[in-house]
Amino acid sequence: MHRSLVAGVATCWLTITALTVLLSACQPELPTAGGGGGEERPPLRFSHGYWLGFFPLSIAEEKGFFAEQGVDVELVFNPDLYGMISDFAAGKVDGLPWTMEAVVRVLAKEPDARVVLPLGQTAGADVIMARPEITRVSDLKGKKIAAKSGALGEMLVGEMLEKHGLALDEVTLVDASETDVIKHLTDGTIQAAHTWEPYATQAQRAGARAIFSSKETPGLFADFTVFRGAVLRDRPDDVRAFVRAWFQAVEYWKTHPEEGDQVIARALKIPVEDISTEGHEFFSLEEVQRNFAPGNDPTSLAPLVSKHVEFLVQDGQLGRRPELHQMFDSSFLPRAANPE
Image (tube, rainbow, N blue to C red; front, side, top):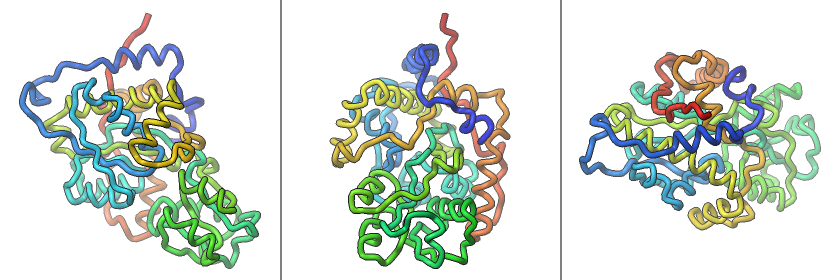
């Protein structure tokens, strides 16, 4: 993953050539018998939440890109991002966007599900925020750090401590939600906490400072889309349409940033000033086709997957190590074009 999907990404926006590919590939395709033909199908139910890496979903819905690409999608919003994982496990949704640590856990329980699309990566948007008196990571020795136990936050804290010569047993980890960090930092019950946007910006306004971020762990925290095996078998054209609409929404936000922010703010009922793509990189269609398409080496994802698998095994959350070749399916990507 570090070698071919993330670390080699110099830019997350389409070049002129790739834009031509995108516009061509994002044209709706006629459904085939495998996609159900003219049969009336229920909407694809897909999870959504308060993470900027998922915000293009709101644009795709509000601008009608799902319908334009030929699929009916119902976004199932959950303010608790970890609740999105529970929704998928309970069969309430057909698809889920999340980081690899959640994807591995999901696939351990539903081995016929597949990753069909890498979405993007956090490159600074996941942050360890600290009280004003904490000016460097070494100041956290003997202090309390809040992070979601057994999840991305704990992984990021571990990476921070390792890079700065501290051991986990030299701090006290407090299991806490990323949405509650402002309260905890303000009342002094903790000295630092993992969070993400828009909560990081809100914490900064309250006086906290960023002392570490995912920018210092390139490639570790990428987002992926997972669909159930039954959906992939029974509705492949709907999944392909969903993927095309995703890239259409990402490109729209890139070329219409102010309007895109307004669309997201209205859809999610959050202040527009809290919306920013700073510290996050969306993978372009060209990048995904180059690194995830059929014929490319799927083991390029091994470093990322292995890091998450080892964390989950050591944390006692994973008993069986997944087979890498069974986790990913690139056949739902838009077909590459050959622009003149």
